[in-house]
Length: 417
Image (cartoon, rainbow, N blue to C red; front, side, top):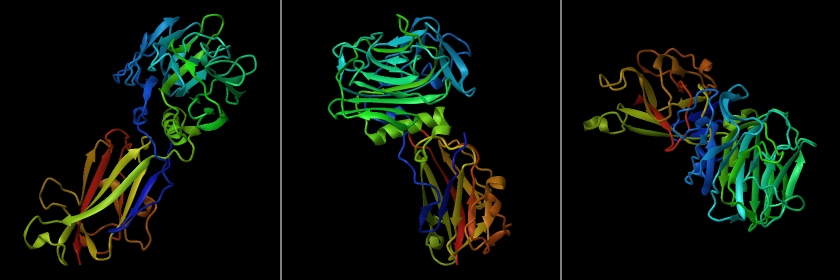
């Protein structure tokens, strides 16, 4: 998936970001408090080892602290290695196939929760794609449905029923995506906060100022329901919290899900959160060289950390360091016969990036900062090169997200004039 290149312009004392403001995001649904259910088609078994393409799925592992795994109840759910858009894995739920899990909430009734799921239809049906009260389709608030129709066959409307049906408790509207289009749904029911909302693909869809105490005793149910309420489609991911999340938290989770399953729908705010800093230290550990005085060498180190949001695509990190006028770049062995052999050293801490000095480092003698590696066309002279004004750094590979935050650093040597 294509993402905007993350660029940094650094100097000895100033750090500025040449990129759009980053929305504070998450690397996992676990990063938001009160997660009670999470199944992911990119990790069906919860071990990183996927089923064989086309294999029946009997258990879909819940990766939340609750451990309420979905298990097969009827029909045959199968794993499709490229079920979503021919790219991403998915679980195929044909007609009559269904799975269920025990109630992940603390009690039989829950008056606030936030639900996210990604699915795609195969055909239009009278579907109850996802419910939080088992196979119950009743309309009584004391023991009614908590369900999503995505959409309903006869009128292609989307319906969200938080605890009953079908009047004031319901949010609904016309489904405008394509029949088989991958779609993210967000449903929030918050009685204490008097909030209820339904969002589609990370965008506001319907909302009101009500909330309901919903029966959830029968547990989570995915796919076909007995009695003619079929489902025919695929599921990618389901995430449930036992709390009414704030709008910022909702957007965090939506950014996480859209970046995985539908990057074409990513809002402009769904950028990765990346930070960078620069430090300087004497080259010599002792003696006269240990002071940052004219004639002595110093080591500059640039550190970059992936603080949140999605992985960054290969080649999308581009750093430009402006050398202070008071120093000269050293184009030689950075540590004079130590473990390094190039003018620039690289250290990785979980980022998955690599650095090839011959292809990933370049220089510029221009008066203005370069904006791409193509602009970094100065051929450095051996030893101390006074013409180098900018050091260009473009690591190879994708910059992973994760916990703890992945990071990398690059170091080079200069002499104080």
